[in-house]
Structure formats: structure tokens, C-alpha cells
Amino acid sequence: MKSIKRLLSHAEFVVGVFLVLVFAAVAAAAPLLAPPVEEDPYQLPQYGYASSPTPPSAEHPLGLMQGQYDTLYGMIWGARTALRAGLLITLGRAVVGILIGAVAGYYGGMLDALLMRITDAFLAFPVVTGVMLTFAVFVSDELSLQLGQGDTVLMAALAVFGWMQYARVVRGNVLAERTRDYVQAAVSVGAPNRRIIFRHVLPNSTQGLLVLITSDVGTMVVTVAAMVLMVVTVAAI
Image (tube, rainbow, N blue to C red):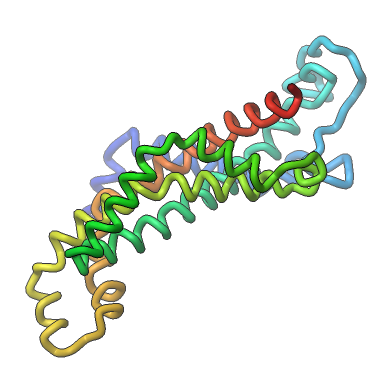
């Protein structure tokens, strides 16, 4: 209770939580806030063909963007897409990074050195280049884009090229925890390594993970938007 009260005493934390909850509520209530007009709810409704945007009106509170697409509708349904993408990519990154970091930190030795060199190799490889190469290999035609395979490949590529920070954080925490008395006691009674890692070591090695995960969700929302814009631009060329 004291830790919760301490968190609630920080205005920045309260405002941040409020904004995230509003964002999640808008994403969850998208069908109610902006009922779909087309069969595909993610297809923006179009109210004309004028090339210039239209100012806000009673029917369209945020106006119409270029091409006469409803801005408010796009923002509401875009929130759902952004939240899903941010959560899925961050979850994939966290799972892979936590597993690799836990194994490397607990076992140490040659396995630790090998896994960390692999981590360094991924860190040295440009993320944008890796994502674009993956996209070019697995989404090679317009049909794949129309079937929605591009979104899946994009999110998977961002997860594959983004787990390294989680691995480093967890490895450092596990290295500190594996010398604790409770871990030595578990080893002495013959507990399996898998049980020691997942039951004892990992729950006590979460320092810094919450901050990394929460910041990564927001970063992935912006990154996905930038990547989609880049892919659309390249495809148009």
C-alpha cells in the first residue's frame, strides 16, 4: 500500500496512467464511438473526392482530411490498431529478451558469452534495414499487402530486431540474483534449473523491466506508423 500511495503522489505518474487508460478506452470502444460504415471497419469512410481538406462541422467534428476521409473515424480506429501493435510487438520483444537474458545470466560461461555475442550482433544491425529486408523477403507482392500479411511481418520483424535491451537488463539482474542464499538453497536441495529460473530467479529480476516495457509500447506505436509510411512510399515508387 505504501508503494502505491508513493506512486499516486507523483503527478506525472497519475497523468500518464490517465492518458493510457483513455487511450485504451477509446481503442476498446471504437465500434461504439465510430460505428463502421464499410464492411471492413478499418477502411476509412469517404464523403467525396475533393483534394483539399474540409473544416470541422457538426457531422464531422474534426473535419475531413485530403480525399474527404473522416479524421475522427481514422483517429478512433487508429487507436485500436496502434494499441494492438504496440502491445504485441513489446510482448514479443520482452518474451524473447527475458528468456535469453535469464538463460545467459543463470548458466554463465560459454553459453553466456555466445548469447551475448549474438545479442551484440543484433544490436549492431540497423533496425530499419532489418525490418525492410524482412518485409521485402516475406511480402513481395501487392496481394500479400491486401491480405494483411504485411502487418504481421512488420510486427514480427520489429520484435525480432528489438529484444536485445531486455536480454541485457535481465541478464544483469540474474547475475546479481544467482549468488543469493535462496538460490543456493534451491540448488542444494536438488531443484531443477528450470524451476529455479522461472520460480525463484526471474520473479526477483524485474528491476528496470517495467520502465522498459512501458516506454517501448509508446515507441512501437510511433515506429510502426513510420514504417508503414515508409513501406507505402517505397511501394508507390
